[in-house]
Amino acid sequence: MARSTKAGNAVQRLKNRSNGAAYSMVSMADGRFFLTRSNGTNTPDVLHEPLEIDAFVAYVNSLEKQAPKKVSKLDLAFEQKLQNSKK
Image (cartoon, rainbow, N blue to C red; front, side):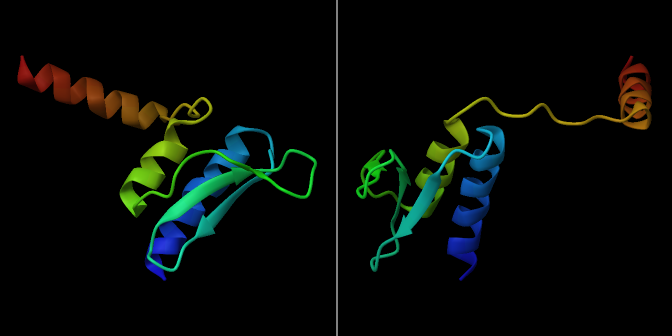
C-alpha cells in the first residue's frame, strides 16, 4: 500500500506541475508501475516500460520543471548564521 502511495504522490505532483495534464499511473501485479497520458482517444499513450518503484518515482520527478522550494526569511538567516560560524 505504501508503495503505491509513494508512486501516486509522485504522479499527483507531476499533474500539479503540468497544470492538470491527464497523467495516470498503472500498477502491475508484479509490483512495477508505468505512466500513461491521455491523448483524447480511448487508448492512452504509454510513456515508458514498467519500472520498479524507485525508478518510477525518479522518472516521474524528471518530467516537467520542478517547482522551486519555498524558503522563508528565517531559513535564509539561519543558513547565513551557519555559514558565518564555519568561518
